[in-house]
Structures are given as C-alpha cells and as structure tokens.
Length: 376
Image (tube, rainbow, N blue to C red):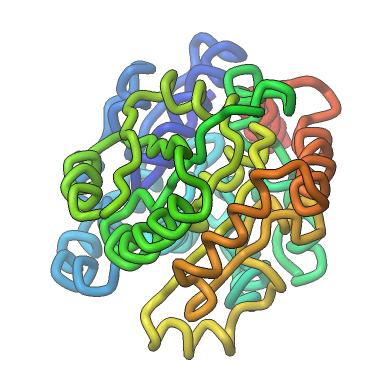
C-alpha cells in the first residue's frame, strides 16, 4: 500500500514515527511519502522538505513566513496528486494539513483522507467540525470525548484511538502511599510565552507556600530547548525549585510527588495519569481573554477535567491565578483532607476512561483504522 503522511510540527512528527512503525508492521512492503521530521526519518521516511520550513506558531511568525508556507502547501498537494496514494494521513497542524487536503482533493476527488488528532472543535470555533467533512473522511481522536463531540457538531466520522501517554502508564503512575514525603512539582509552562506570563505568578506562589510550609521540596522538571530559559528565569525567584532534566527523572518525580502546581497544558494529563493531586493556573493576554470568553465552548480548559466530566483539578484563570490563591490551594492538597481525597478518588478513574478496551496501543489502533479506510 502507499501512504502519504503530512505533519507540520515536532509533536505530530512523534506521532507519525510511531504510526509509521505500526503501519510497516502490518505491511512490510508499504511505501511512505510526505512531510515529517526526525522521528519519522528514524523509521525510514524521506521528507519532501525540512519540517522546520513549516513548523511555526503565533500570528507574527506565520505572517513572516507566509510565502514559504503557501509554497509548501502547493508543493505538498501536487506531490499527493502525483503519488495517488491509497490514503492521505494528516497529523495535527490543521492550518497547514487541511489546506493540503483541500487542494489535493480538487485533483483527486476520491482521495481517502484521515486526520490524526482532532482540532479542538469542542472548545472553540465548533463550525470547523462540519467544514472538515469537505476534505476529511475519518478523524482519529486522542481524547475519549471527541467522537461524541464530532457527532454532535456534524463533523466527520471520528474514532477514539487513545492518547500516546497511555503507553507510558507504567512509567508515570505512583500510588498514594509513596507520596507522603514527596516533593511539590512546579510546572510553569514549556513555551516561552507561557513561561513569561506564568513565571512571576509561580514565583510568588512558591514564596508564599514556603512561608506557610517551611521545608517543602520544590521540584521543576524541564527538558528541550526551553531549559536554558527556565534556569535563567528561576534564578530570579526568591524561593528556587530544584531543577531536574530528562524524562526518567521527570517521571520519577511524578510517581512520588505530594502535589503539583501546573500551567494548563498537556502536562496536566500526565499529572492526572500519574495520580498527582494538582492545582492548575493559566493567564492569557487581555485581548485573548476578551475573544476567548465569547468563543470558548467548554466549562473548563483542563484536559483531565474534560475527560472525567468533573472539575477534579481546581483551575485558576486570569486574575484568579495569583500567588496567594495558588499557595492556599496547593497547601490544601498537602494534608490528607477532603480536598486531597476528592482528587485522589477522581484520578483513579482517568486511566479507565482512556485505555482502549482492546488493549491495543494508540499507534496500533491508529494504524488499523488507517488501513481499514484504505481498504474500503
């Protein structure tokens, strides 16, 4: 079979690498073409062009590189049309990948298209779901509530294939008994813009927590290109967390942490799967807040809360995300009281909701779905 796979950023490349391996296991003679990065290259994939050409975020960086992006969209769509693959697989990055699919469909109207990772149509701009039907046959969802959301919004067929984090449950999960003297995790964000907004808030919260509970061990796991900036930022904090790097160190801390203070993001899902009681905070610029209040369709922005259908993790947004409030909320989780017990009980349900009934891995389930669509 011939698979054309397109992603636009490193997180999609990581998913693509696992998907490639799973597809090759099912069809050793398969041919792969498209756009990807290092993880896909390690699985024998030659990208049409470097992923760095299109891996940009934010309005200004996108505008600065717009001519390149438009050229790469056209080149990729033309390559799809020339290859005539059994299936086109889009991995995340909808602003790039969906445009490729629309252009390719004009030449190949019967082209079968899979979108691996649902856009957040359930959170904002729900009208996107119905529009996706123009160029997408099947959505592979990472979150268990997404198939129902697409059905409700009139989107394409959607199948839950599991989040890649569930493959790491054994590395993540710790039990409550092992957390008695554990550290407090500090996770102020993995992007520069988030760190800039949340760093001062977290600094203040740690100083207040230290005053409330002297002797706490604060630990900040960090990795990747932002590590230097995190270390530089923390140097200005009056109470400095102990910085650890590397995934094994990070997951070891997750297994034993007494509690965590985290900026909203995928890390909250890691914390939930690890069973770590957590307080979540987030701030956005005032303009984004103004727009978001009118467009966001969900009662919470915290992924574990959306999956569980309850606000297990307390979240503090905008002005509520201040040092005093956060310090008090984390302190309430350090004792074996009602706040902690409620969270611990809620978090026992999250892996049940996310594991696949078949016991299949997410990449395996995704590969099965891609092959099944190609054979329809």
